[in-house]
Image 1 (cartoon, helix red, strand yellow):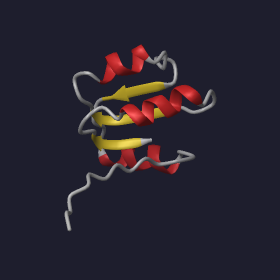
Image 2 (cartoon, one colour):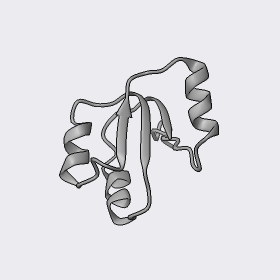
Image 3 (cartoon, one colour):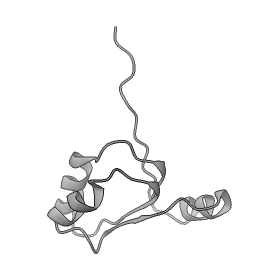
Length: 79
């Protein structure tokens, strides 16, 4: 489960999901315009769902019921 705004289509994640036959991804929130196309291109339409933003309590319930939570982190620091 991923909740929130997904910035950019996570190609590597979708490729990994395509390789793993048992995995599912549920996105609750905002996705990029090309997300659905990227999902369908990989044949993941039955295993990846994107739903509009839900109330906080519903998001928490979805996260509590999930086997795995997805956290994406943008590389923001340069040294």
